[in-house]
Length: 234
Image (cartoon, rainbow, N blue to C red; front, side, top):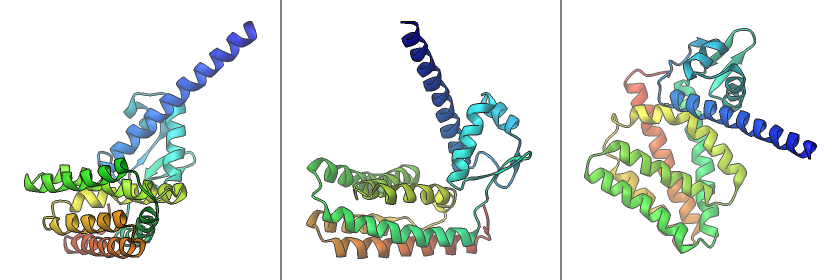
């Protein structure tokens, strides 16, 4: 009986430790992606722990996970540094996302999606249209992100989805920065609708080509906007 109780207590401690680590990870990641923490600056582990009002152990575990995702760089005895993303990095990330997401579009088109999944994608496009009608770019960005993540997750390829998530996070700061510098994204909504129509038809080639063209154009526009405003690094 005592052995069983001991095991249960150990499991509860492990679960509690994991929940603290998850919280540290999600909160620190949010602050990085939303540009609430200065890029390129160096922070000691204790400073990060105090910033999050947490102990060092879950913070250390969170930093390791963020380092694996390429968002921070851990320096032994010197804490961590939030990795800046250069214009060259951004161009490369756009190229990778173009390739991965266009492959995902083709894979998704080959699957027999449920009506529920199709409606979820349709609703994302509808929400993008509604957001533009109200000139609400923040709402548009959220609906756009939802469409892209659905497109990838519904491909059924978990490894591809994990890669896209990593690169998507790395591009988030630039994406949000250019949100109000770019023209009103009406064409983006049109591209998403065409990709979705190809997926519904089961036309993998059309889905791949349409989404590739969309990704190439949006990536090129983002890089040109950043160059034009002298934003070579974030």
